[in-house]
Length: 284
Image 1 (cartoon, one colour):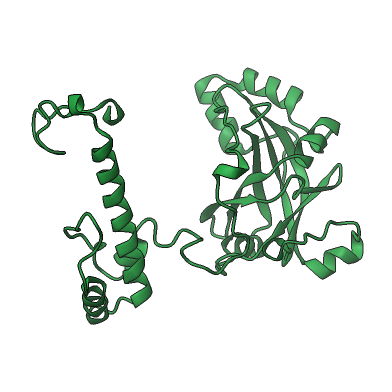
Image 2 (cartoon, rainbow, N blue to C red):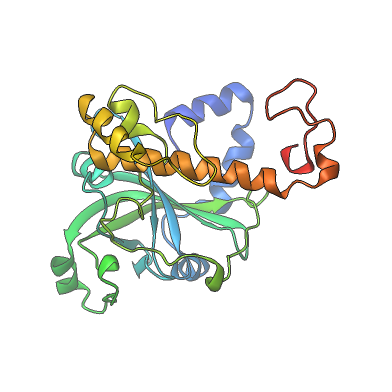
């Protein structure tokens, strides 16, 4: 239940203890709306990403990220917005939380142009794509298979307010010709990031494969041996391959840096970890 004064009892208590109540009240009165005004609606319409906060009925929290083409978040009216749920990893953590607790928080940040953010807090309702189109038939139908919404989350806006610019970094888009295409909706584990953080290995009770590599690649039969060792430990072949690939990429990266060093850089160099070794400019 919302208070006449925005914010939670907890934040009001902390404001009193730190002496910021007057400053907070000024922010509440000047910046916190219960709807999306014209400039907020324009801001939402051009966003390509949002950060999402949900919690289950016990208060256990989850934060997540959503992205799509500009305008993937739809403003249905000045008190309602909607965003699509695309095909993902099947866990459904955010939607599952909303099934228990409809309160959610959204943060949209413009890193590229205005360096400003917009918070939207409210109550959510989850609907099937076909269901929401009965009420809003004008919603866009994306031609990209991986961006065809399975579900929509509609949000009844309770609070909308600015996230100030002072700590938001100014980023730039990478030109299209220098970045790889996004694999919308793919089930290819490697294109989704594979086991980037080594979690699959940790879950299997062991660290990622760590061994000496030949500069020109693995020795003959090495991957076969690793697969056999993985099977003995109950690790699937696919996980073994990803761990090998990830380590090999890191070795190649280090070797590439070593090859780029000029003779002057190597004066006094006694190995990557030797005491007294001279670090190149890129290592500082």
